[in-house]
Amino acid sequence: MSQLRGYRVGGTIHLVVNNQVGFTTSPTESRSSTYATSVARMVQAPIFHVNGDDPEAVVRVSRLAFEYRQEFNKDVVIDLIVYRRRGHNEADDPSLTQPLMYDIIDNKRSVRKLYTEALIGRGDITLEEAEAALKDYQDQLERVFAETKEELAAGNTEAPVSTDLPFPQPVATAVAFETLEKIARTQIDLPESLTPHPRLLPQLQKRAAMLAEDAVDWATGEMFAFGSLLLENRLVRLSGQDSRRGTFGQRHSVIVDKATGESYFPLREMSKREGKGQLYIYDSLLSEYAVMGFEYGYSVANKDALVLWEAQFGDFANGAQTIIDEFISSGEQKWGQTSRVVLLLPHGYEGQGPDHSSARIERFLSLCAQDNMTVAYPSTPASYFHLLRWQVMQPHVKPLIVFTPKSLLRSKLAASAAADFTTGEFEPIIDDKSVNKAAVRRVVLCSGKVYYNLLTERETRGLTDVALVRVERLYPLPTPEIAALLSHYPDNVEVVWTQEEPANQGAWPFVGLEFPAQMGRGISVVSRTAASSPAVGSHKLHDEEQAALVNQALS
View 1: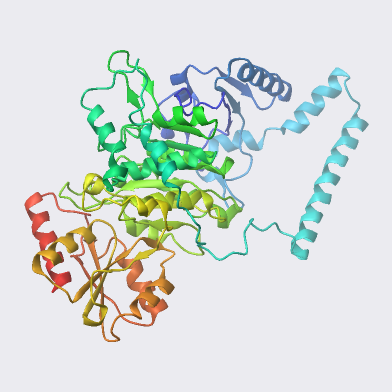
View 2: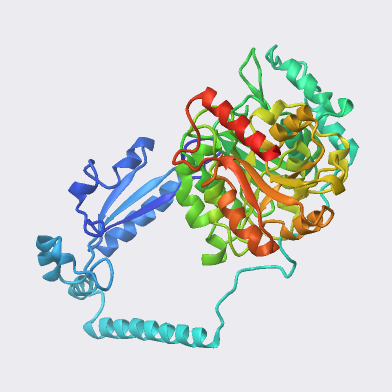
């Protein structure tokens, strides 16, 4: 990815400390190539193989690599051929698996001794000077080692940077109507020289008219979030597979000239005119692991920016599970390393089969503890708008996981009014204002698309005794807000969690544990039957399952 637009860093010096064994695995068993560095040939990077027993050669090669990187801003690789004198760890005996190799190593003199003898033989130093230098170095090591003990005993270990404010902290995220108008106009105030695709132009015109029609869809709500942050002089960066257009053709953040093939960024042009903010949106390479890792690193280095990685489908985030486990969910606790990175994961059961339905909500919630990140499943464009703005405006630097819709992207039922963007803030739960609370027998808690399935069926049946409450933030679970909300319903009201996912997946494994523990009351679940696969492959069976769980939730 080092040569791709959006991921260039001006070249990297890759130093491979090649001890010629991987724990107990020999090179002939660990790769097909001759050299461990052969992979770098794909970008035509210079590769220097150097003997670690020759310190002066290592210095010459290192200087050459540095000068190359500085001159050409390209990658360069140093293959430092060395050996591991001891085992992989203190208890390991490498001679058990590499006996011939370690017979040679055991009889080999150390680099220090070989180089000292060479320097003395050339007359560069005397034996006394060599011994004095060795003693001075060993004394430094002992002194530093002793200092580490003193610091640990005194408890002076560095703590992660934090704030005394509770997490999560509410933030005012509404913007002026004039700001929304300015952003909306970017979709139709296009240069005369630009030739948009004839099928795209009506979409842009429709988007620009949504404010006046008081029905803002998902992509437009996102555009308002990005644009308003740019006008507040913030950096917005989004990358992912098909992110410029959007997997589902909803975003079109870039207009490609039909006549010339040139790209035009409406929001970026607005940003340039205003002299505020920076916008970067890239279609990424097809490696979730590599790109998510890059975006995490970018967010660590720029904590004031809105940095987003988007999965083509949320299911594909599992290709980057190492980044999620080792960095995003635990980096702050392990190293005090903070990040505001946002993961956008399309999620929802619409009969597309087991590989295009689930972003694995359960996996992310299983990683949640100690206020390490925010996990949200917004149900409206306005909720999503406020959530994105909250992420960069709130005082806590935490990752954000967002489960985003697919079929709701253009749904009129899910559209937001203009006033929803000019007032309010992100709400962790959304109460049902359409029911007489005193007459409610069941409160259904749910998140995301299933709310609209339940709402449509409830209206069809004319039910008035079932309330539908949306949980927009899954972690931290908003139990104080839920408790306050439930206090307005009858004491004996039944509380049910409803989800599209199987019972062993989705939010239920987390909610089923946390809700009773924090709320002191029981909760039941309506879901698909527990399954090893996220979803069925038959659209007919999917429809039957969906109808059954909706019916059960409302009965």
